[in-house]
Length: 530
Image 1 (cartoon, rainbow, N blue to C red):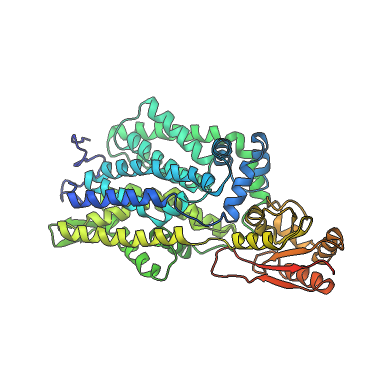
Image 2 (cartoon, helix red, strand yellow):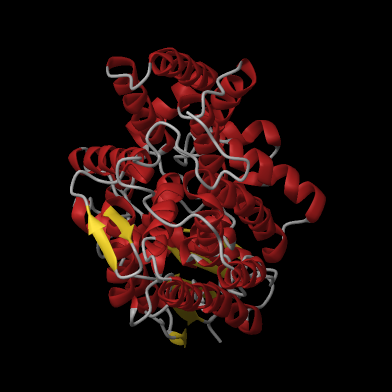
């Protein structure tokens, strides 16, 4: 194992195959550096640029984080996530406030701090060239930009995943396995577990790779380093034990009632869409380009300026990264499919570093300087378009609905959110002095209780709910119903609430549903009798 002063010719544990030469050029050219710097400047701005109102998951995160610090963990038993991000967001809100820009800025900071780690990861695996290309890819990736623009934990997951990767690389490949780095592995691993449950599959994949190195070490020192790394992962698990009872309760009672299971191939395709382009019209083509670059990063080797060789046994440079990322995704999505759990592309935040490295590696497989530059421009171009699309996209219609309620409501009127999943974002957008409740609990719409969600909804009585709403509004109060018929486990129930209210009072449709918005609904007014 040895490294040069610049790190550009690192040959650690098979990073390059001396029998065939380097997998890619390692020296960064000025035009690549310029593109990366521009990408960082643009990506830095875009991480704080969205103007959309908070949608369900964001508003729910903020509402939970605003609970007393000691209550956050107990409420999350009704939600489905571990508490670390919510604790940090609680402290952030104490300092910076709870406005949309303020609560999202925490993720933006996580996104910015991730950028130097991305450069360092690329530099280790392919010298300055790969470092600058990875930096450009991460800076403009629509996936990274979007989740740096959301009040959710996924930018934090990406930051921790990059930090964990660098520490694991130190221990397993660079032979720097002193106690400081091993403690770092344990702490970062524990932080990942306390932030998102898909981190379990990332740590499991890393453990499997370490076990392989114990069984089939390349060098004598590999077995000892891998054993110490496994010990650090055990330490991460021990640090997670206090939360384990809550996780088991969530697993038994919350789950993902908002979506159906997704086949692994479909899940991977959607993740590539989200990583490389967003969901605009040309996303399919650019997802294909991303897939090609992934393949080149894993199988390709530059041979001169006009040829790229493909090795079906994979190139050593990014082989370990591909194995860990692939295993993580396969374990997670296979278990979700078998156990009938849903998959959302944001869960892929745990494998984001590996995908970014492979895509950037694909760019460096082009040996001709100006061809490589052209490919990088194309990649940054479609990533940038996707990032702009993501920050310009209005994710929820609740802001417009809240404004319409504010304009029409009088003090004492009643607002119903049906189903309750519209409540967190919708109630946040309403400033009028009205009473707000959610269907089916008639409770506070700021929070959603996911415990035994489907069973609870199936046992609900929409007619009785609507009659209670009319009684509580009284003869002088109007009733506003925000409703959507597309949510799982609510078959026909919001329509029944609507029809019961309409049988008692004339209905006025104030806001039409805009189905192009991710979160949308109708607003119907049932005015007080004249």
